[in-house]
Length: 218
Image 1 (spheres, rainbow, N blue to C red):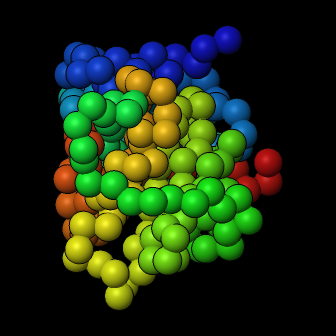
Image 2 (cartoon, helix red, strand yellow):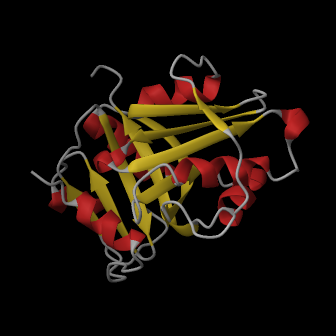
C-alpha cells in the first residue's frame, strides 16, 4: 500500500506542489521506526497517525510558524514517543542517466564495508545502501532508501580536498548511477553553507524542509 506522503513528494520532485493551505496534514505512521514532519511552502505533512482534530487544535490553519516551533515539536515528542531530529533543508533532483555530453565527474569505487561516519549515519536512517569512495579516499557518497522508500544521497569530502568542486562531482556521479528520471533527495542542515552550495551546483532544487521523528525503541 502506498503511503500518502509518497505521491506528495513525487509530485514535488516533478515541480507540482500542494496548495498553500496552512494545514498540518496528519498522516499514518511510516515503517522502519522513522516518521517525519515535512514542510512544503505553506503546507505540512506529519506522519505518525496522530488525530487530525488534536493537531488542528494546536496549529490553527494558517499559523505557519507553529508547526516547527519548540512547543509543537515537544507535543509531538510526547504524543508519539519519538526523538526529534534536526531540521534540514530538503533538495531534489532527477537522475539524467548517462548524459550525452561530458559533465564534471569523478571515478568512484563501490565500498560496502566503508566505516566512514557519514556511512554510519546513513545506516541509521536509510536502507539498501550503495556506498562509493573516490580512488584516493578524499570523498565518500552514499545512496540509500529513506522516507517513503525514496532515494536519498549524502556525501562527505575530506577537509584537505574541499573548495575544488569534489562535492559536486561526487553527487553528480552517484546520482547518474540510478535510472533516468529517478528522483533523488538530499537533506542539508541550513547552516551547512558548503553542502548547500554543493547540492545546488549539482542541479538540486530546494523544495522544503523536514524533521525526522525517530522511534529509538523500534
